[in-house]
Length: 421
Image 1 (tube, one colour):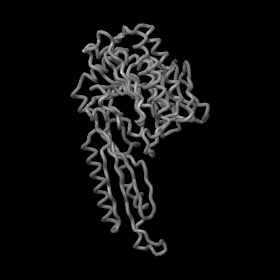
Image 2 (image 1 turned 180 degrees about the vertical axis):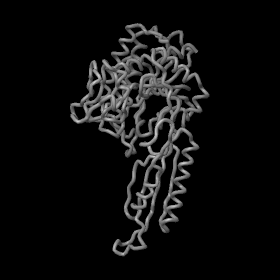
Image 3 (image 1 turned 30 degrees about the vertical axis):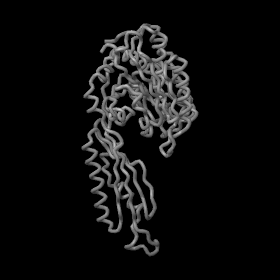
């Protein structure tokens, strides 16, 4: 059952979330996995500075811009709600390096009539219900895309805009109940570094990342994730005299990659199915390497996959005497499910807040990870709330304006739910 907000509150949330979103996506913030800098790209600091300035303009206390790529701020509890448990709202400023992120031009397709959406900067690119079936839910509404040359950046600038819109509402309407809320904006989430270096002492016990997709989504489970490096060493000999002597490491790498189970690849899996994903391969006749990510919702299944890779490496050394194949696996993040189950109020209050907006709750497991998975493992149970965007990391990425407003409303309801104990 929905708990209706006053019309003027809803109008402000819709206006603020849309205006801020359109402004934020035009700031270039692509992260760089090859960079050793912190944050990985200096341009991310431009949006962090903007957000810090806007928080100060809204009268938020203790706004701290950290040059390592964070903004921390505190919205004090409203008078009478001081006993409510504090919670954090988090979103990230960086966008994926999978697509260009410089010069984003957001385009509003008003009163969309279900026809194919075209892109000015790439006439051959279209967005249809076949590409993204959830588009059909927004017939007659305003759909926002980029112009076709770049991604849009709804991941996660929608989350930024929605949090800022909720803060604006709390400041504009002092009768809206809320306990203490900590605001944290991070960098480099898209390259797996978003929670690295975060000051855990600045966080309350519980939190939410606002980084999900379809309106109504609540994600309290994610992949267990591993990174696997495979180094192959061959035997180099002059190719004119190589018979029965050379072991070509590059060929060996190709053969190794071909052995990966096709049915356990990202292209062939969905739902709760795990996979091996070959993300990088390089080499020459003497040395080659493969880089994989291994994903599943169960750690035991990932450990099985890693053991299989090590057995395959040992088998290759037997098949090709003189070759060396070394497998190195490192744990990237763990499924946050088991820890969140020990703190049911985090999910229960988010469920109630989504229902307050009138949306059905879509309880899902993330086929990926968020800053929340890292924070949960470090003692700060953090679920993931929807931000509304679709087709992330794509030039077809889109979001409905109504989704921005609904997510902002959910955050206002969430704050009230935390005051109710």
